[in-house]
Image 1 (cartoon, rainbow, N blue to C red):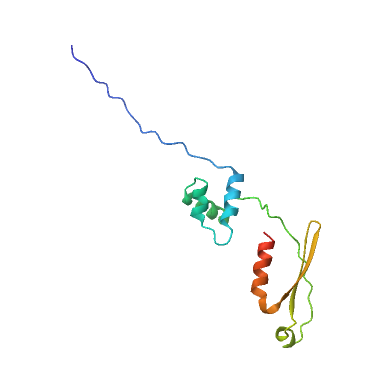
Image 2: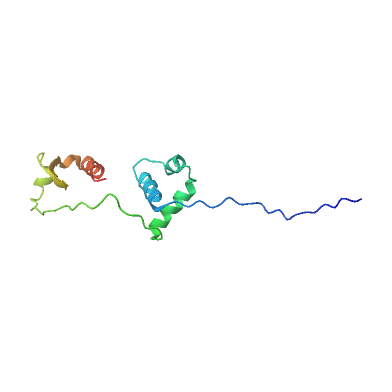
Length: 128
């Protein structure tokens, strides 16, 4: 008696592609947008290949992926004030004035012009 060997076509199975919800994509992209944050670090912390997150970012820039803006819009009123040549920028009392209203909180901030960069950084962090 002769044993016959039947060879079966064996196809390697691919793992199923993972899909990610828009809410998760939004959360990850917002985490990546913070200053000094590593995109690869954020991706790996969620168990996602960093290349996928880079692709999402590119898709957002191209308009192929639209993520909701959860930070909201804060209106800012800007009032023009007359500038006295040479006096306002050199005066030690020159200030940047910002009014911010968020819900019931209304704040008026005055910041020295000489520290304008720090004011911009503080305001950016406040409005996040």
